[in-house]
Length: 116
Image 1: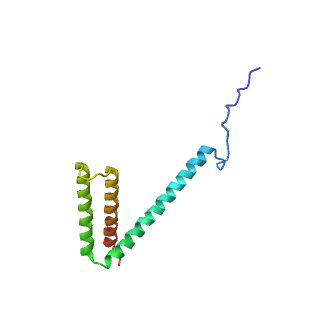
Image 2: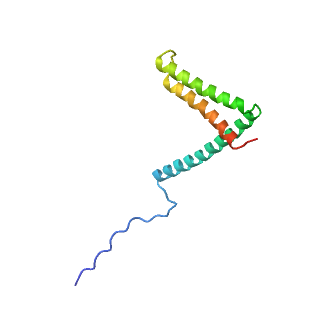
Image 3: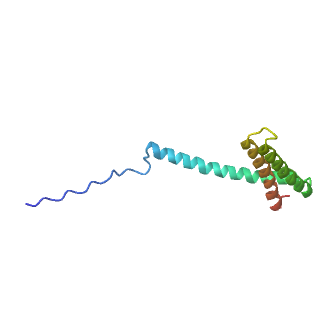
């Protein structure tokens, strides 16, 4: 008599909703990251609109002057820190500059969008 071939072992089939610890961790990280980026984008847009409305009362001249002063101040502080005239960490100087330029960029985005 001939032997019957044994069926190949099948992998454990489990329902999709049964996740192990690593899969739950990945799912939570993915959800939190996606939700966090949506909230951050909404905050950026809201801040741009709020800053543009606030600056709109002053006029566009003040926005341009504020932008020039902000960028100029950042460059002066950056040069002073690199030459050792002031004792600040480079990370702090860059962080301050990024925040200043970011705020003014948000104002310009709001102004360009025609926020009244």
